[in-house]
Image (cartoon, rainbow, N blue to C red):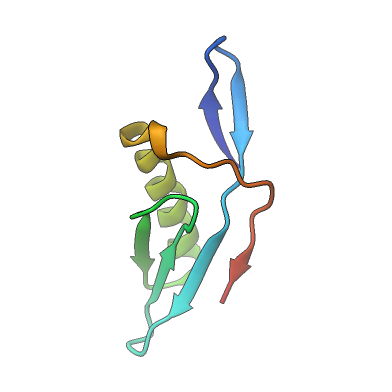
Length: 77
């Protein structure tokens, strides 16, 4: 869950579905379908989860007009 600040200044928690792919080279790549262009990669599942949180936070800072609320976080490997 990632925090977002509402217009009133309170914090809203959002969940985003991420799809994780295991690549032929052993690394993982991930995309967040609700956030067009939000992708990342990592050498381990722990790293990909960390990188996903960072990628989503950066996306929301840079492109808040493209945010779509999603009710549940699902990870597909």
